Image 1 (cartoon, rainbow, N blue to C red):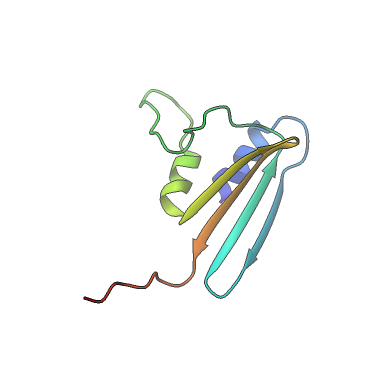
Image 2: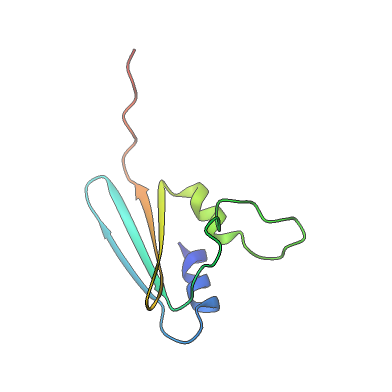
Length: 93
C-alpha cells in the first residue's frame, strides 16, 4: 500500500492524494486517490526491463494483494487494494 500511496504523491501532479480504508469480517480494502493518471493499461502486470529504474510498485502490490482495481476518473486515478483476512476455503475431495 505504501508504494501506491507514494506513487500517488510523487507522480500525481498538483493536488492532494487521499487514503481511505475499511474492512469487514473477511477482508480489508485500501483506496488511494491521486491526481495523476496511468496511461499503460498493463501497468503492474508486466515486469519492467531490468534497466528501467522504476515501475515495480504496482507490480509488487499486484503480487501481494488478492485484488487490485485501478480506475481513471475525472480527477485522476483511484486504486483499491483488497486483502483477505481469512483463508480461502479449500476444495475437499
